[in-house]
Image (cartoon, rainbow, N blue to C red; front, side, top):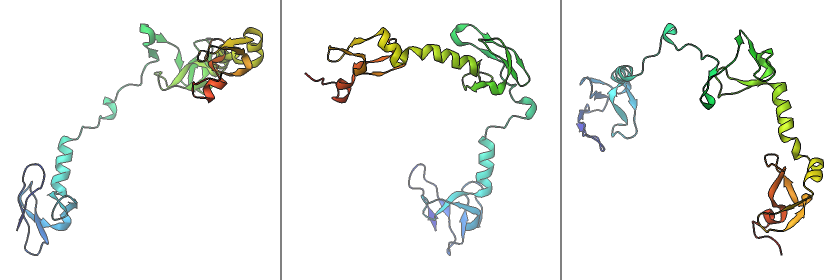
Length: 190
């Protein structure tokens, strides 16, 4: 009895009359069914190559693992952001903050996947200080003093600052679209 593969190149292999042995299409020897991995696409329910031939094929085409001495050296603390190299001191488990220039333990820095050391360039204290000044304008008190009224970009009406949601990334700290236009899906209310 023989079997042909349905898709791809046709493969013929011998199967014993009682079905207890199959022929390996790689080494062309008859082996017991237990020597073949399961494969539902095959008529016999077993793969075409025996386990030992499959393993040998996998080893042949597998990418070799680098030996410990051949592995890449850890990345230096250099970044090419903006076209210029960015460096900082790294001493054991201490890093230099790019803002305050202090040498601090790595626990004092936020994690960052985009830096060679895996830690942010500025320490947590400097980062918090920067964020506070960056987004300080987005408080209701500050907005009330600087922008008491604002014009909605959707409906074109001039409205009180309380009609807009706070948006910390906007220059004036307010969303450019009023709450009424947002809730009505940009239709506006007349």
